[in-house]
Length: 184
Image (cartoon, rainbow, N blue to C red; front, side, top):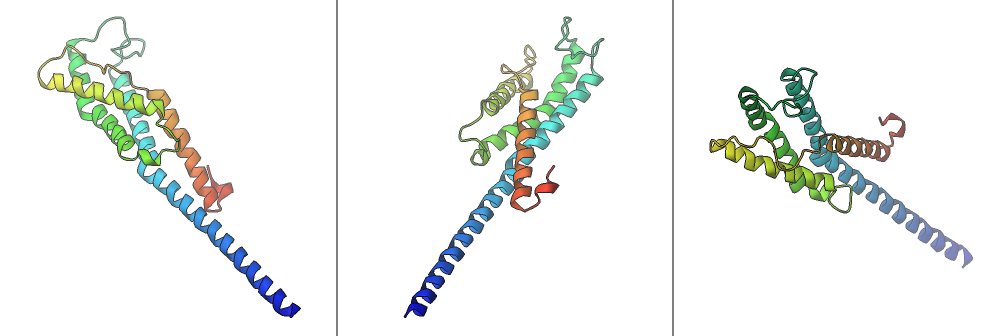
């Protein structure tokens, strides 16, 4: 009788351990799947776009710098008509499509945010894009009175946010894959 109770008890304990281990593995797989989606659908593209935009803007400023290496918009002398024409070309061809892609990521993939609430930096990005869209619409109508968005672009803060979140998720991904020492 005792042997039967011990056998049943061990079988029950084995079942519970197997169930809990399966549950833990399932939760780990679900977490890994979410991290992979966060990286592939949101933070990876956001990081790539912010880096590309930053480097392209740097190239623009370098190419069109005023004496002292400043942007035509950060200089005491206002931009010339030629500089403004070049700026409109760069904005409509490069910068606006990049920041619209960033904004679209935020809107379409907000469910993949790491935070429980929308970070203010991403709200500022969305507002900046809207501000530039109206400016570009005015340009299309021939009105060149304005050349900047009504909301400033959070360049450095957004780049730091995207870089930090991307890096943290890559580390989490490596940990979940059992590659703790290989994460960079």
